[in-house]
Length: 415
Image 1 (tube, helix red, strand yellow):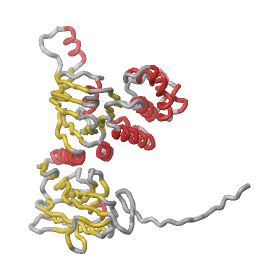
Image 2 (tube, rainbow, N blue to C red):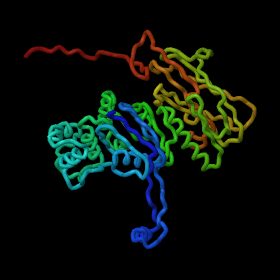
Image 3 (cartoon, rainbow, N blue to C red):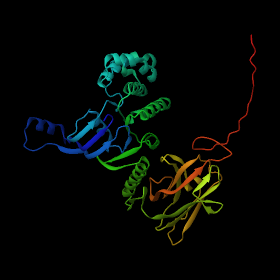
Image 4 (cartoon, helix red, strand yellow):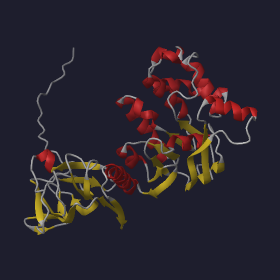
């Protein structure tokens, strides 16, 4: 079926030679022993993407994300396993990949079009649309070597998406473009999604992944560490980063998952409970603009140099809506261990969120961020629902106070 992607037991390795002469010795067959070390960038990857599905690929630098995309698009060959892509594939990988620097943008459009499987007549027909979308003006007839990185992205994306593909693969290249063009690109990608195009999207931007993708795959050390919803993936990904920081500081941090929640930390301080109160009573549903109090109980199990308690409100897709912590609010917390159960209240005079479901992530850490010393990080510790107000209608995730005023009224007179 067009748009399907299937990856089975995929592996990609590279040969590493200690010095250039080792490569020559091996080429000439002057030694019975291998002169290289085999380094696997990808190993035993298995996943399937259904037609019309939007999947994000995330992972740290060097995890193998870009290599995976190159194998999928055929720009590099796998050493083992199989890859099957059904239908026409359009890909935007490394900046300017496939562009010849001495040819003009227009000439490169034809070459890129041929590589996408388009016929000359199709490219000629699509050229006005490509020029209009790229918005690089007369530069279309100038050598690509004179282009800025942003102009290359504009042209590359315009060509890759001029004719609707069955599968669209996009790497980090879009992050180079300006904000205006990024909005244009994401609008086109969303339109493709609505029309059933399969999307494979690589980015470090959580908002982009969560807004575009139904599912995400975390690549870690050349393998699949997790395949789940974008929200779960990024919570686990952040926990992995914090875990590495803790290992560097010789702390014994752990990661645990239960019921869709991710919890991690060294355990030197512990979150015990969290709840939302309205007029002193627990609440899980309330109308927009209601004053609420977020109460959090915690204890300290080991001496600490500093302690911060943070909160982050997220929407149902996992997008960050609002977050703050006691470090930024200027409230010092106790740091001595003991049996005392501490309680902190975040008071919101008006919770001006739009109607919908939300969750609260809580974290105990040092300094201003949990990436440093992460003592306890509790994803989706609290969930709640905001209902629409009957006296004030609006759309979006934030209820802003608006005062309309008609300033002038002009009467048009005939000449």
